[in-house]
Length: 434
Ligand SMILES: Cc1cc2nc3c(=O)[nH]c(=O)nc-3n(C[C@H](O)[C@H](O)[C@H](O)COP(=O)(O)OP(=O)(O)OC[C@H]3O[C@@H](n4cnc5c(N)ncnc54)[C@H](O)[C@@H]3O)c2cc1C
Image (cartoon, rainbow, N blue to C red):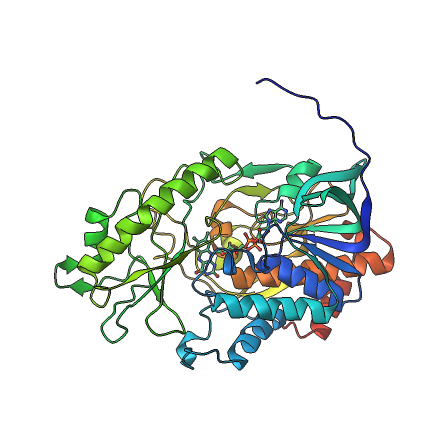
């Protein structure tokens, strides 16, 4: 490949903080709030014009699973406490997301905690001191700037910062590197809630006048789309659609992302036409909006001091160095080659002994100091990742790493040297339960 040597620049150092959180998705929210509430001067940088990540910019339908955690529950409670016009107070929908309300709740929680928020900002490079990260170079409308930090928490989903810092990773599943498919979420309205069907999982089979809906989807929808996933919202008539699908995409490759956005946008009108034709209650549905970004399920799995396994989840292991507790979700592996779920039936056969914990070691990259991983990019197998990638668990992981970073700063040591017992003491005092 032809190359170009970029000229060296002198950059302004615009902030000097204890803890810098890169990425404001569920993990970044948990990390930033927890770090700031634990007393560290904390800054959050985010690419988009709002925080929430896939929960907001990705137009996600609902927080899934039965996880518990104080910051996660506070988010839900604060969203539930305000009923917006047109919303109904159906308690069955307590985990379903009103995206605009969630954005405001998250801004409030971050600001109340004292987090410095900077939107429209990309983490573009790292500032290293040997193997230790000491800051991040950002790219924004203000140009390239430097932010110095004692600890950086990578909550970018893809682990952009960790990759730039030289942390080791693999992509996708162990045997062939294939990653879960991507999906562009979208919202429709004009759905007749009195008659509408809401197949919430791939296994939900619904008989409709023309046949069974998943079979019809498999036959009629543009491949590799082909499954029907529809979710109620708190506004009657509006429905979240999780039905676009594209395989063979690497979410860390901008050309793949571009192809995925174009292809999935093209699937949207075909899916709407399918729903109007086959799904009762959807005869008059129309597009309200598509997500601001394609939803990427899986990319880099970093090499941490420990890699979470499927057995750890099934056995509900209580790790001595836990930093995230009471996590609950099954294995949600989508078919990496077509529509629907993984052929091995990891989800259908899922059984566990209870809620599981995540050890601190999964968040510490093996060879880089000053850096923590949080969210879907922590160290874990392809199968384990399919469970811990969901948003409530990402908030819990973020919360744990935020507390860990604050303890590291307070004690003047690098994160890997922090005694997990000190992090746990802090988390327990903040309402985390084992
Ligand atoms: C299609 C789809 C459906 C899903 N369904 C559900 C569901 O129903 N329920 C559920 O709980 N979970 C669901 N998930 C999983 C869940 O949404 C994600 O795994 C979760 O949001 C990951 O959280 P995160 O904080 O690690 O990353 P993200 O939510 O991806 O947040 C990362 C944030 O970092 C920002 N960012 C990225 N790179 C940079 C950078 N270089 N500089 C600055 N900012 C950056 C992004 O803009 C984003 O805001 C789904 C995921 C997908 C893709």
